[in-house]
Image 1 (cartoon, one colour):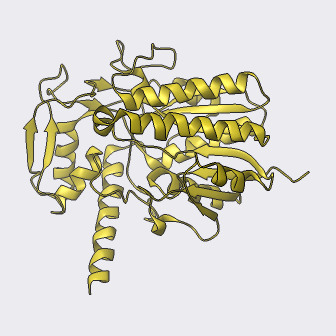
Image 2: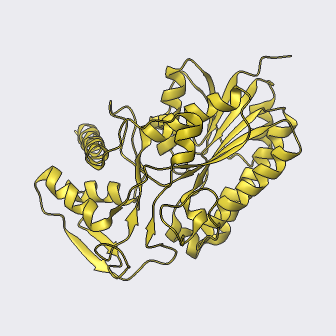
Length: 336
């Protein structure tokens, strides 16, 4: 029997996945990365990790991944992530997030995979009645993106309940920032994440930041979110993987800092960081957006001893800005 000590990272050429690959390689782990490069970038790949280009729902790709019998754990990032797009193209989200994940889970069970960590989302909570929101709060998504993730959670939990496989479900809040050493960051073109949009606008790469609604019942009328640095999020995955490998039981865990900032507060912080005014325009609310979503993170802290290192909006913004400057510099160098 081959040793099941290799880790499959789906979506490992994407924003969070590329940071995860760096952390796993630093920990001395053997990796296989699967990514169809639809939103991921070939530039984000690491030569030390085996790479297979393709979709996780493709039976030939799944056969190729699991044929060696060495995959012991999966960290599953692959999927579609835009709330606004999910509202206008829901079938894409159920196909890419739910159906594809079901195919992966089925193949993993058949291959004897021991652990799966799934990247879920705070969008499963919809419009939480109580903030901060904990893991026992009702799950009532308000957009297809949230539903597609919640359905996958259920499939994964039910599958683990009838097998020896265990799972960790991390419900991300708003992930932002970049690797402090600038080895990785968000490369997505036309991204909709506020902090990436804001730092692009600060560098003149976008005309302005669009604020979707300023009439919410929040401190200044704009949406409030719990922003978490991508490096701390990756650290939570490492902690959770160790927990599962040490025979821990399946878990659902929030991954956020436990406090929120409004859109206007984020823009003001970018202005302070850059010393430049932030061009913006207020338009109507966007379908599928909640007013305020903040994590209750006590469970992950108590269970895993997870301790964030970059719990600062200023640090998040600084790394995001530095990353955008690096990307702009790389593009300028190529244009010469």
